[in-house]
Length: 373
Image 1 (cartoon, rainbow, N blue to C red):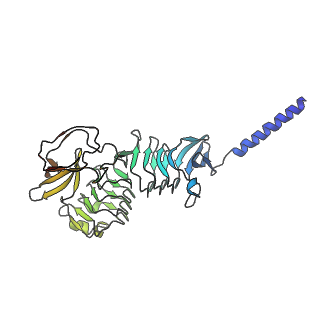
Image 2 (image 1 turned 180 degrees about the vertical axis):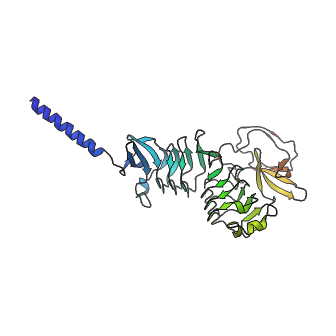
Image 3 (image 1 turned 135 degrees about the vertical axis):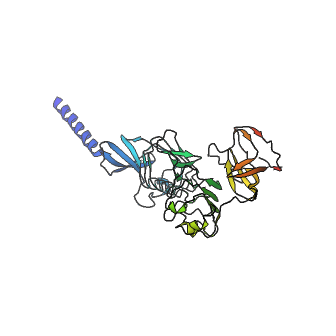
């Protein structure tokens, strides 16, 4: 009897060990856990990367197979450390709405054509973001980066490297009409403004490199203000302005530099290169407030402005971007900007709409008109 029991135990142990051996995964094996698919990249240490279900377009057999809704990519899965979000891992996931990412590496086109994606949160662990990661995400309006991240940062939902010398991605779903690239920026990254809805953009004199396809398909652009003085020293890569309507979009350049731009590669393709100076309808931000020029006198260097919100129509402000609305104590008076002196003549509709953190407004200047704000 004891012999029979020993034999049975031996058979059970052998069967179990065979099962375990069969369950061991090799490098290249794929498996699904939760909403996501993974591929083994190392067995010692045990590591995986996030991958699409199929290696070929459209990557998912049908919409039901693709990740959807709000997704947090885990740090660990079934005993493996997740180290990479692989190429095209979430591409074509139309019902994906938000992401939280703690994974160090995000590969090329990882979230390509996720047209339902609206928000992305990058945490401290993220250290590498390859090109075209958020391309064609037409409703993405906010990319947030944790303060502890050592490689990247964000400002008003726009993605930069940590020291803000490179602008990486202006989300395609942002609805703002105008944007001034910060003066710290030296490089405008590949596809940084792909498909943007912007009509007005300002390039600071600090820019040294405009990467390939930086402004590609920004078809709504009406005006580009460039403060670059030595345009010949700036590297402008292929297709930097591809898809921009160069017949309708004004390229506004520093005084005396028109011929330099007219002869510079990429820039010379614009058919309307003019000396930069303020025009009626231009917008700019000074302090907490945004202004729109309603009258300008170049001879006197003065003009009139109205205080305006981020958008000209409801809801007036990007509900998903922090620190945009005026707050605390605001003084409205004469404005000095780029050697011009402006007087506020109007409070535009919606200019303080939803400013819940606003404590007081000092309107010592007598406005011509005050609309609902």
